[in-house]
Image 1 (cartoon, helix red, strand yellow):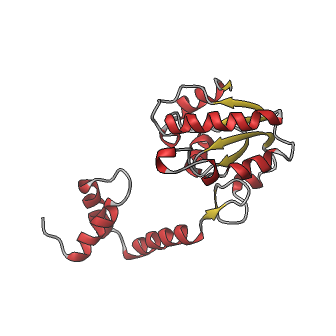
Image 2 (image 1 turned 90 degrees about the vertical axis):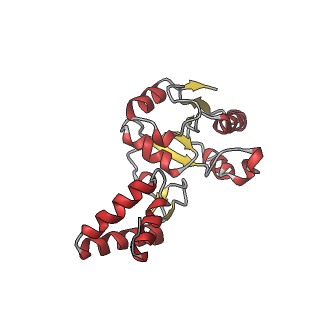
Image 3 (image 1 turned 90 degrees about the horizontal axis):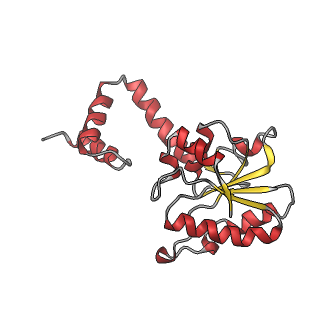
Length: 198
């Protein structure tokens, strides 16, 4: 189907989004054309602002718009609990269920020798520095339930246990091979409740 170049470029831009195929990209592009100009400008500004102003929390590695993220700034949280996740998007998934009240640590990925990712490429050193402060009594390993996530959890359990800290893993209510960010609230809640010691 023929479109002016400006619309074709917009369709291609939407196709770069995860989970958006050609038909959805076309629908989104054509919908944008029906919006008032002010809304389109506001949407474009929000995209640029999010890209330019979002950074990583210096403490945990979560998305933030300042030095510390909203979770790390919340002093009502339980400092004895630390949930280790692979990606900031996993924090969003965990927070959706509104049951976990501790803090987080983002690794920035998982151990994957095939991809050349070892513990040195992850935020493991920063994790151990946080744990040596002595406040954390339990580390919950919430890496993805796939080969890389399991390898990462086993490695972390091995380096954390000598510190005398309880190490638990989310229970397997999560599908193997899946990603934490796509899990529904009930599955995540059950997995958190059924976590086990490693």
